[in-house]
Each structure stands twice: as structure tokens, then as C-alpha cells.
Length: 140
Image 1 (cartoon, helix red, strand yellow):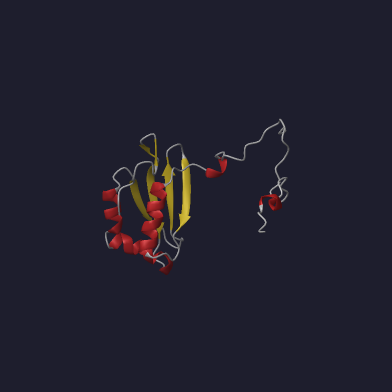
Image 2 (image 1 turned 45 degrees about the vertical axis):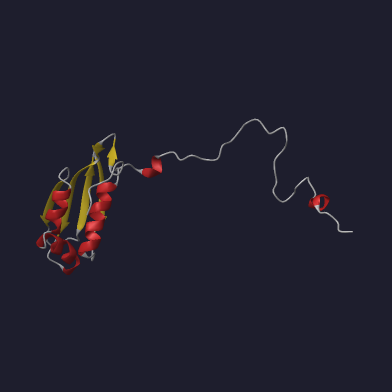
């Protein structure tokens, strides 16, 4: 694992992910979560990312999931049902690298539009005003 690079997971130099809550149970669907806790992978992730508060909760008879709390009271919940330990670490890394913003609300750059029509007219690629036959040299 590598620490987050410049621009990933940060806005104006402030980490956006504040807290991770990992909820799991003793069922087979939580095996991957239990493995990262027992093998120390979660401790290693916490050492690499000291800016994140990590909390684990054992909840009987509930499916495993991760809740990410971002700056600005934004929460994301991701299921970890039947995931391997490596996949769960990837989920945690992805949550760390996200800004927490809802990207559907961000305006994307569209095609430029003009209210004034072109003086030359609309260009249509299938209809060219210049004939290609004019430029072909004839052999004599």
C-alpha cells in the first residue's frame, strides 16, 4: 500500500475521509473482514493512513459492510459480503481516495453551443462542396 498521492482524496490539502466503520458478524459472509482484522492487515492500513479513524463493530446476524464518513456529513455504505481480504483492502483504499462528493451533481463540460448561427452554414461531413475529381490528374 502506498500513501495517497497529491490530489487523490484531498481537496485543498484536506483529507476528505474522516472515519471508517467496519461492521461484521461471525457468519461465513464476513470471513474476509475477520481475516483482515486477525491477520493485522487492518492495523497496517491504519498505520499507513493515520488521518483516518477506524472502528470495528461485531454485530450478530448482520451482513458485513463498511461505512465511510466524509467531511461535510457525507456517508457512503459499501457491502463487503463474501469479499476476500485483498478485495476489502481495495474497497478501503478506494474509499480513502474518494472525495465523498456526489459526482452526479458536478456539471461536466458539454459541447459549445451558440445562439448565433454560422454565416458559412452547418458543416456536413458527407456533403463536401469541393469535388475530389477536380484534383485528380489525368495521365496522358
